[in-house]
Length: 225
Figure (cartoon, rainbow, N blue to C red):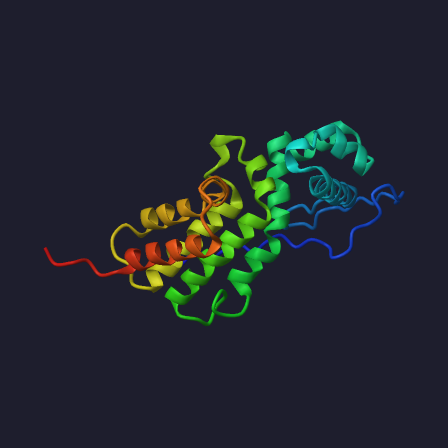
């Protein structure tokens, strides 16, 4: 049975003015349902993510401090730490925010990236889309990757591995598909993509061709011994 893939977090299309005063409203959980996020806590989270996103655009992720984010969002620094834990936690939350549209594309979007195309076509399109997405948000990815222990548990990365494994199975790949998917996802590691693109000077076209070659090898039938 194929595990149901999680959907990206839905965020409001319009953000309120960071420093606007709004009345607080408490929401009580409905009996038998998981408790909903309190309204003022949800507003604070949106303010913080919006402020942090703007600061990253203006100054680069490596130059954004927790204090600057709290000041820009007009909330106490303690609120920021309680919500995200630490700077790496904030960067990871920003990544989830940045990945919303990207995830929607390969989970629900039109083919060949989304459902409706053959598995190999989707795998090829997925690699190209992921490489381009990483390059567009590389500064943020590298900042969030500072904590090595979280590298393989970031929700977006886990979802990518799950998606690749599903498509490999649909394409008829044999062997330990989970390990093959993890290996393929390693090619899409932000630090590696950044190294190949900026330090080795490899073109986008070469990186995408490399992905297609790896996928073709992963689903090729085993040669008789």
